[in-house]
Image (cartoon, rainbow, N blue to C red; front, side, top):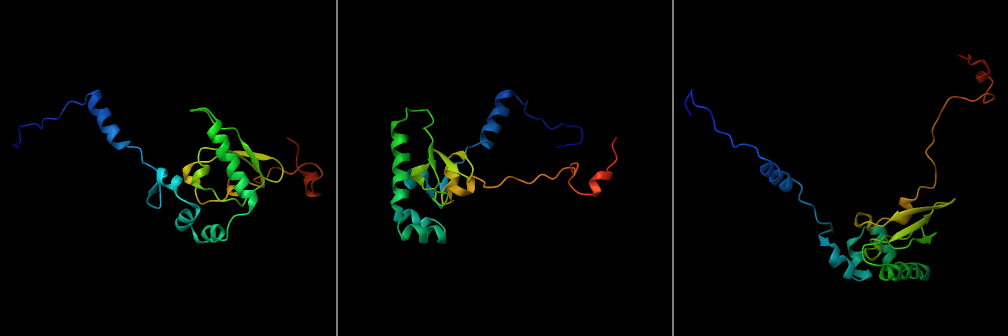
Length: 160
């Protein structure tokens, strides 16, 4: 290029901009430890346990209690009976130490937090975590102004 010449630029049209955006917004396909969701669902519990962290792997190798099997059966049956495109009916549980498995994905679970139930929809990112991690058992403490009668010093807070 010489000093007097201008660089020609392509006119930015709506289609060019949309093409660039679509290249940037390629949706990432979910995979857990290199396995995609379709293959994860078809794996047996022993094969799934090989992919999980040590504590969860040990728990699954030592076999699950009967109540976990009943809970998983309920989730699977409700998912089968729900029509396509609708959310399944929620299943209540006190099993906070239940490990989220790939067969539980897209089901709704009401997890007990000690006082009530928190509704949680199981997503693929939750695989390997415990259900109790999604239902907090305590409220966050919010400190405010002292109330009247809280302490002796609060009696002398000036009224504005």
